[in-house]
Length: 225
Image (tube, rainbow, N blue to C red; front, side, top):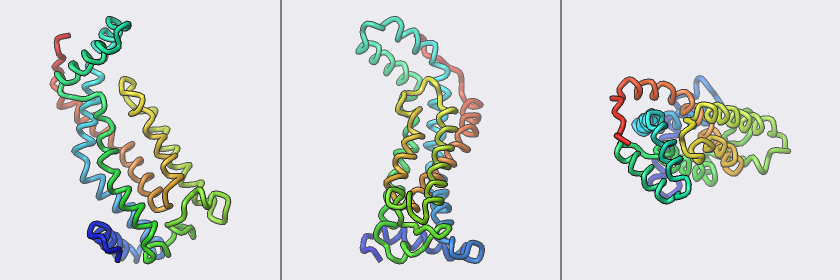
């Protein structure tokens, strides 16, 4: 055990999941447990995903007003920023609501990182022969390069889809965030990379569904600007 209550709880939960799916996945049960663990996390933060979808719908509705404010105050960025902030506040949204799910998932990513950086009972497990504690930067040109390159390629593909689907009116930070996942995966253990891949894929699949629900419930009230 790791001696830290939260890590110990996450360790036990992960191994319980692994034991439950061991008959199906055999030696890959811990890797499968990481995927299930990530799915559980994503289920917990679905309300934040819905808030993000509502923010995207609101941004689309406010887009004409945003353009007018930027054009009207092109020579006064500070005033434009104040009016944009007031516009989004009146609409009940935020220009940066899109980063909420990512921020909420960071503690769980950190948990996965810590578990597969120092827990020997987990480090001995693997994915297609590659140790779950292996860092891509240490193994990209080693015997497990194919697994690591495959993981990074999948994350990049999901990131590209996420970028293409991003709201054009969203801040650049939000639109480019999917590609940041690839960079992050380079510096964390393979298991944490699996967490990132699963979370990114979940987001890509979930966003259109939540956005459709948000559009259905949107009242279409536009502030009078």
